[in-house]
Length: 126
Image (cartoon, rainbow, N blue to C red; front, side, top):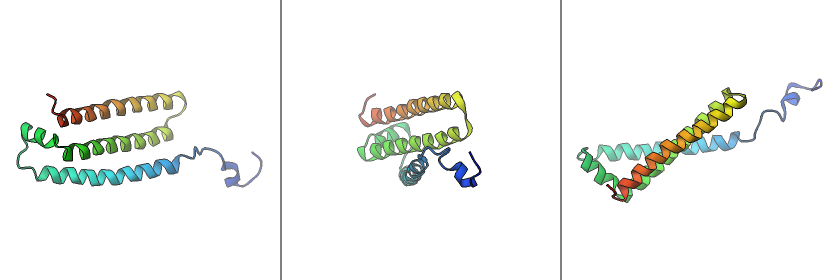
């Protein structure tokens, strides 16, 4: 590497030029999570009843189902980005690839299940 300065030896190494992209997505999803979670808590607090039928009727409204879908998508995307950074920082070699694949499968399975459940209720299927 020669006898250059410290910054000269490091320049060009280690950066995938994705840090800013992840940082912005993390901040945007954090903001949307705050807004949508506030909406959810306020909406739930204003409900007159919390039994199964009342909650199912509430969630079957498009005015509730759409923000709920946005909340689920935002939370799971935020979760995925955050864990991806942790995996990239602490895992090496093939363990990183395996961990990323497992993370993506987990987020897709759980997020897909949540979206399916919301859509099923919203469209009135039994």
